[in-house]
Amino acid sequence: EAVQVTTAALQAEGFLVTPLQYTSDYTHNDTRAPDYAVLDTCDPMLLKRVMGTRPDLALQTTCRALIHGNETGATLCITDPYQTWQERALLAPLSAIVAELNGRLWSAYLRVVLAAVPISSDPAQSNTALV
Image (cartoon, rainbow, N blue to C red):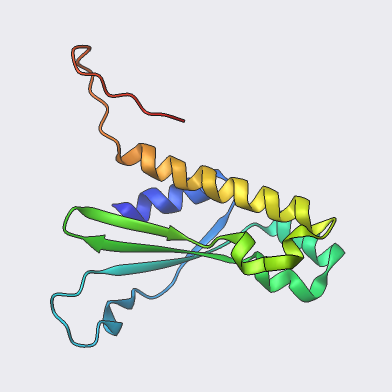
């Protein structure tokens, strides 16, 4: 379920999502190891903008999401564009592209988090989600 929710959240932010082979084959024969799923994400419009600015950096527009199953559900890790781009993230006009990419990835992340928060229809219970 976490993979479907994450895929939908990324797609809602305009990303194309490609699931990579599940990496449960890489658990080093540890039957206790949790499941993993890896998603490649790319926004064709951001890719086009980077190609028009710095074609040599176009491959860095692809991000990854890792969904790691555990005893309580799943953990989601998403590429941090500022870590990937490092000092280039501060150069104009790339800074605007990286800021947009970062914002949309965070928005997708928050969609996943909010989808996981149980919201009660009982007014006596106070479940409040902060956005």
